[in-house]
Amino acid sequence: MSPRGVATPDVRERLFAAAERIAERDGPGALTSRAVTTEAGCAKGLLHTHFAGLDAFIAELCLDRFARTAEKARALASLTGRATVQENLETVVLALFTSGGPAISGLAMTRPAATTRVRQALESGAPGFTAVQDAITAYLTDEQARGRVPSTVDAPTAALAMVGTAHHLLMTTWPDAPDPRPAMTRLVGVLVGG
Image (cartoon, rainbow, N blue to C red; front, side, top):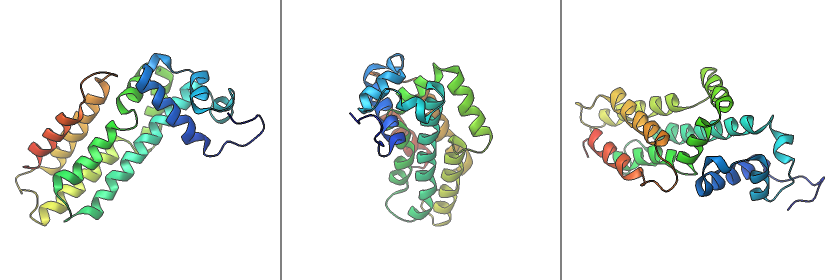
């Protein structure tokens, strides 16, 4: 544990990773500020020093993970013509299910104030599912121009189906439920003609 008054390196990520472990292992109901700081091995008040309470922390955690996935999705443009289309898309859509994705989504749903904060941030332009959808659409269109995706594939609709299905699976999956990733992999294959 970090001694009082000593800076904790990369405190946000340390707290976020601790929250993900708790939510995955014990479920959303087990997440408290004390549980997070204990899991992170830092001072009990650290979460409240960096965030305006647990709801703000949970909202920031969700927004951070959305932004990371949107960044992976934007990187699809650099993969055009490389590997397989299905592999490239799976890298993005399956990233939604890593780092406690279903547990974190469930956590946000149990905290109305956190959900409101996330919605307001997304409405103000924070990257989220729409950014992922736009990047997938652009990628599919580029791959169609190279002949690697059939011209019959409606890129915007395929992107919407991938992101919408990922969202659905995130919202309806709980710890110890069957792994949703095989269903996502099958869907990506169907949508891009794999």
